[in-house]
Image (cartoon, rainbow, N blue to C red):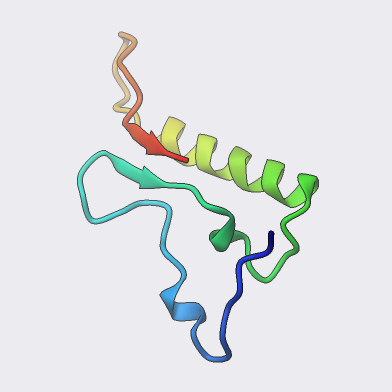
Length: 70
């Protein structure tokens, strides 16, 4: 199912990084204006994974990723 976006309301599409520390949002509504097919969903998932990876502190030890909501 394609998310429905009204005209002039794209500013309402949520960002991946939320105002809540460590909370991220990944939804097909963020893929607009691309179609939500397998290719665009995979591309979006990779972008979210990269954002989460880059959000990690640059320390020598492994730490848990921030909370992700899909």
